[in-house]
Image (tube, rainbow, N blue to C red; front, side):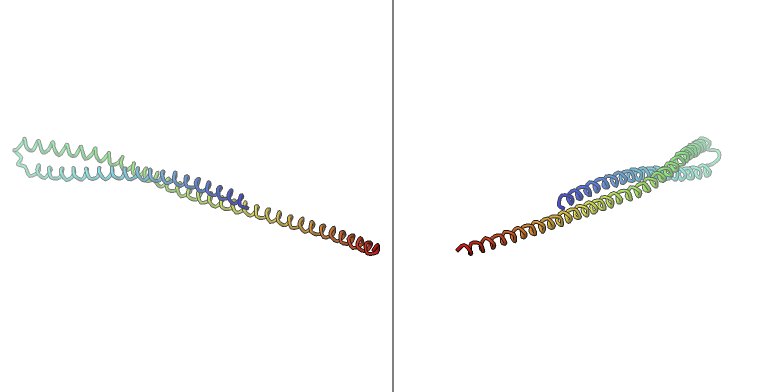
Length: 187
């Protein structure tokens, strides 16, 4: 019984290692997807902050332009150029933000898929452990049954041997009694 128990324990340990490997691989995939999602969100936030800063600067420059005397051509020209440059940068950053938002969406979808995959792998790992435990119990039960059967057979054989020995002993006692009787007659 000890040998099958050890084999069952070894099988359970192997299944546990395999299950841990499955769980580790799934966790690594989720962590990678989570990192990609965080990076995409950080890029998106940085672009939003850049656009906000440029909008603020453009509004301030536009206000200064509007408040500048109309005959100050050079200053108004510089301010107008600055407003145009800021509008162009805002437009470029808005395009980048749109792409970044798409990247966030894709990363979010990938994260959700990896999370679902990890959940499925967790179920697989649990099943591996349960199957190994069940197989171990089944193996142990079969070994116990076999051992019990061997013990029962040994008891039967021992009982038969005792009965045969008792029969021989009886026959020998009978023979000894008859020889004793003959010896007593001869005296």
